[in-house]
Image 1 (cartoon, rainbow, N blue to C red):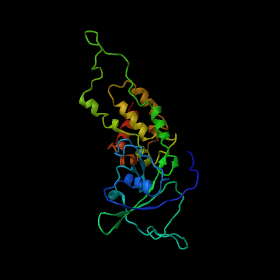
Image 2: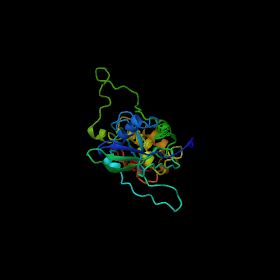
Image 3: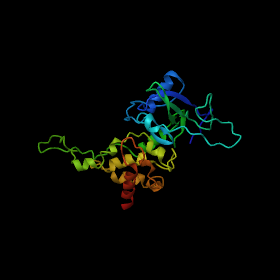
Image 4: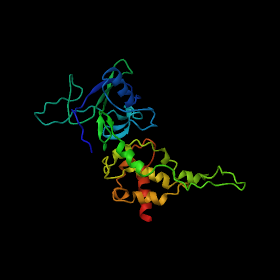
Length: 275
């Protein structure tokens, strides 16, 4: 894993926001009006692309789906040993530094009424388990490389079915509703990395292939049209594949697409072991 390079510190910002604002809204406001050097990644802003995954209050999730009202936590005094020259968040002129790569802490104030009140603090950090490029931008290429290794595309037999008249049968890959139901939810995976950021086993390298890659494999293993099931199961039946999964099920938390990743991982592990 590449080690972070350059100076590292915690940067604090105080913003007037509403409870229904998303954390992405807060960061965009910071970048436009306060600190144009702040770096973070986003695209669609609607929880569909998965490009804005970060750790909010230590939990991997998407910036665009996390609202201030749900994630702001009350500001509390930080217990420190005597002699440490730190001040609690919110004091005038407060500026703390720490060994972290990410800018943290959006201190939020509600501007809905005439008298503002503090909503709390939101701590931000890059997605865990991945090398950090800058600020809140993590390098997710290791995860994408693992997915590519498992050939995330349909592999059919390549033989075109024909009708009795000798024409190509356009319904060659027609499926029944129960066949579609086996993999339909898995096809909603957007490779955001939230499950891998929550996994205590995955470290962003080659030690464990990761839940995202295994979910991708499961999607095609459960597809009745795919003919490469044995090859796919062989590819993950390794020490760095399903054998490395410890069934912690932390990967199931906060999946933005509603996939029970832990359950699907258990299903694919059971299928490998039953062969």
